[in-house]
Length: 198
Image (cartoon, rainbow, N blue to C red; front, top):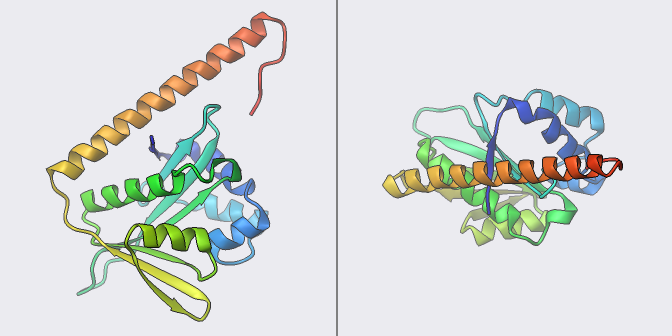
């Protein structure tokens, strides 16, 4: 599944993605009830130069799944770690998007010398717990929260090639969907009908 690395130019699409999540989905994603105002603040402060954001797009280029890989501050004697957060819109669930985002983040983490991939979520976040356990993460529970850890081996030539191939495939997939969407809009314009909006 093509997973594209996002830059700051996608900030509005990231915001739209989060705003489409239900109240319960936002609670599970952020660990607490999250208003539109809080979502706006969170998205405005994503540092695309420091952290890494990945996205999965549907045929209409809607951001249907996204992951935020936040690099944690380095501390002496502790492994270099990054925190992984993920969300998938309802229409994209059950298609392996969450798994693909986690796999993409894990490979990128290895290639950027991250030693531990970390997930913090509510203990009753069953989709995240399933995803973490499926990936072989060690899960610890405490006071209604859950922390999951995945120890990552160092990068190797295979992971470097894998990430480059994934990025090329994602770029090709995005360009193809973009061209199909433009062709569709042009066709409806030619017929004198409004273009499809999504």
